[in-house]
Image (cartoon, rainbow, N blue to C red):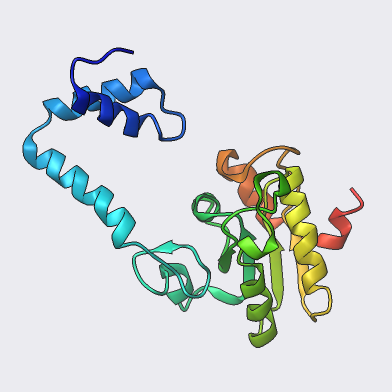
Length: 205
């Protein structure tokens, strides 16, 4: 793709570095921005800056938040004794949208994947173990993707928490093997949370 402007070429390069954005789509975005009012563009750029500099990660569950403690963890109506373990912020959003889960979360920040160089030490698993050891947690729900990486991570956590006196459950597999939570419809995901099963039973399926 040939450009008559180096500035446009640089802008297209940055936009096309985003997941799922090709050169043609990036060029449409750039041309759209050029047509916008200066104030709109300024507001857009300020939001992008704020995403990098102003967002925080909750000290309790590691999800993305505007504050040191996220709204879910700070909500006294949520059951602090039930912790749902998820991969990232997108899964928190997906489960919250069902309106059926009333516990809190623990965000791992990824899944164990040796092919991508991601090991247990790259995730917040140690923080989860510490949370279980010092708090009155009665149940851990493993709500990870039904993929090889998700199953590997779930089993690793299962082994790390096996010595503790708590219920370890997994979401029911209304979700097909290979599916990711963020793309699952709310009804199926909600039922999977409500109809969760003991994790050791899920190993025999």
